[in-house]
Length: 154
Image 1 (tube, rainbow, N blue to C red):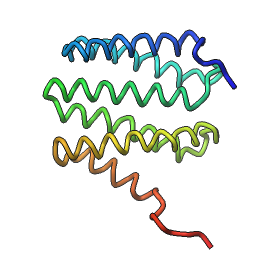
Image 2 (spheres, rainbow, N blue to C red; image 1 turned 60 degrees about the vertical axis):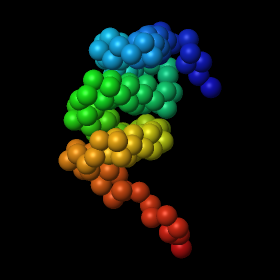
Image 3 (tube, one colour; image 1 turned 90 degrees about the horizontal axis):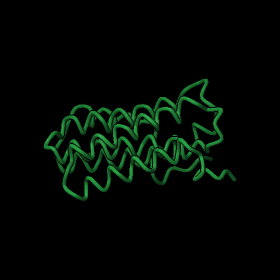
Image 4 (tube, rainbow, N blue to C red; image 1 turned 90 degrees about the vertical axis):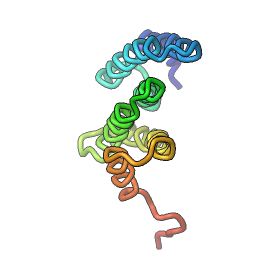
């Protein structure tokens, strides 16, 4: 098992995310946005450097959490359309990883695990802000690849 807490990039992502969350708690969405965008840059580095000794689940979790936090900031600033775009972007990246022919299996499995987070966030966004074309497209794309509840393979 990897000791990912000590990896410098993951540590930096966590620090930036904590700063952003503190700014959100202080009701300063614009300030929080700056921190979360910085955290997303680090998360993108984590995804781009597969030779680093970080679990794929941790890489993708950082990527997804950064997007969820940025979407929350947009929503807090009264920009639900930008929030929808941010959520959809993360969701489509996970779908691309899940179905990519050259994507390592471990990364596909991690993408499958994280897909539930973006699906839930998209569903919550729709419940709070109404339908949005990007949200509907992302949810429909995911539904097309999800197993039917109760279906059994024989």
